[in-house]
Image (tube, rainbow, N blue to C red):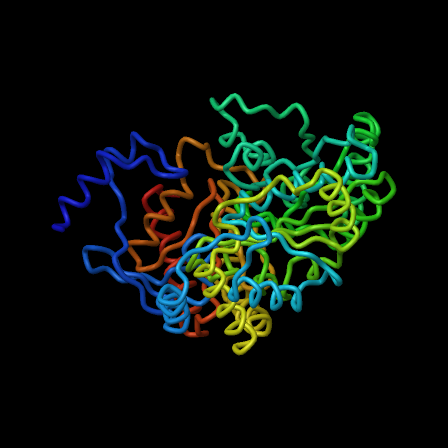
Length: 455
């Protein structure tokens, strides 16, 4: 199909996710036509280092042959089947065995879904089911956090503490409580240490729980590192103290590991990086390196036993999805986990992440447009500011982050901006010289934007 024709079709027919439709009608899409390792190509022949692994997903790059072969072989053997009513399939069993072996919850049980949104919705439903099984059906409220992103389904969006996820949708958030986000750079008070900041957040959360009534609260959901909320890395000690507080009031902890899982923070799971054991956690994205839609909820045996007893009494566990445990998706995910072990993604995330954060700090620590560089493992965020001394932000209407993102593409790299926070989350197969190339191009793009502003 000719370039102009494909572009025109997309502009006239496609309502894109997380996109301004009117701007899309004017500007059109960036059409990606191919991928090679950490690079992707567009329909004009431009080649980019994909510094976001797509959407925090393509951990093994964009054309891994083993994953393609795993999909092809399974398509030829059994292309579709379901897991309702006691059915299963071999790739599904292979995957859950591998995932259980990696899980920080042991023993555990695993429920399969198709996206992070579905997995997070399922965790909430499981929390409600668990509380009902314990004779506490009135424990239904869920605590989330300002700035969180937990998906785009009705519940996932309600849990997300991002205003644009609620605006004009008429979201029902009556049973959602939003705690403060653990962002010391922005939320810390003058003269407050990180330890004091953590203490204040925990005290404020306890006051919220008591005001709402702990007997009404089923669970709290939290990302170890808040991804779409701006790559917010929590202060040391935050999660262990959070866990103790929730235990005090009989509230489950649900960890959203959709971005952090499978090595991204320098451990297999983000909850391990921040020294906390949740009652359930969700995974997606990296589970198949983004090659097939698949997700999972991993729960403790205690949660499972209560759920299983309740479901037995009801005659069935009344939840599930047509494509849960899809054999092709499971075959690809199982192969991805084998590759992760072989290439030591945890070690690579630590080594390459240290290299990337050091390169960013060396190049941007004193840059007049950079307020904070933050990250952990192979994950980083750069917050742009109008004034480093006062931390003053740019006016939102200037869309500075979006300007830098476009300038990055002109320099041959793809990143993501969340407002004026720039995110980097490259594939694990990136090499140190490619990390350096990525950082150099990013620095030049920030300078390009600064020059255009006469800043």
